[in-house]
Image (cartoon, rainbow, N blue to C red; front, top):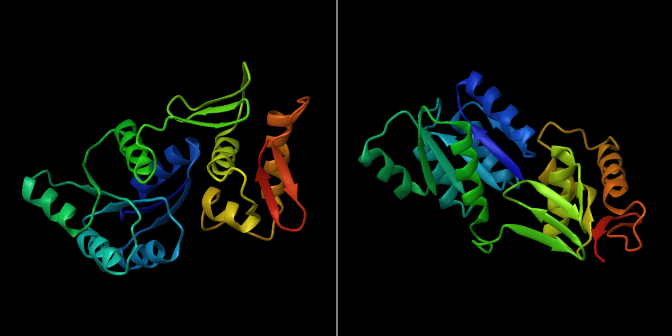
Length: 222
């Protein structure tokens, strides 16, 4: 999952970015409303964490402009104001949820997970393919009865493949959703991570799930 943080407090951005990356998210950041709007309307983000008080363009204007341009990406707004009127303004502008500072990182994560479940089955807590099971809440993966020890990036990569089961996904598609904006597409990091993931998921198994589509990308299918 790829998330955009738009926040002018650089220390908070570092804190949120580190925590989300450790949880397996790809994270980009912008420090003003103008750049935030540019990224939000150009990039394939799964969610946007958007501060209200921003230089150049405030968060209310950013989310309103996103919706006016037809960008439906879920938006979690951050604010130091806890008045009902401020929350109503944000929701009316097009935000999907509102979080008042100071907040716990655990709550932000929970709200993001709730936003990301919207548009899919709200009760979805597992992804499956053959005997492979991914628990999205507990952040655990099993192949049969064996639990797989995955890094956060491997978990994110496998989640993306599972959500696009039986579909060929290109390296560019993987980069856009699993790595951040600063990633160098000229490297072979995607292939390296897929190779490591395949060793954990398929090594020694009769049924292989992760397949290479030569010259195109990868597909997860039984």
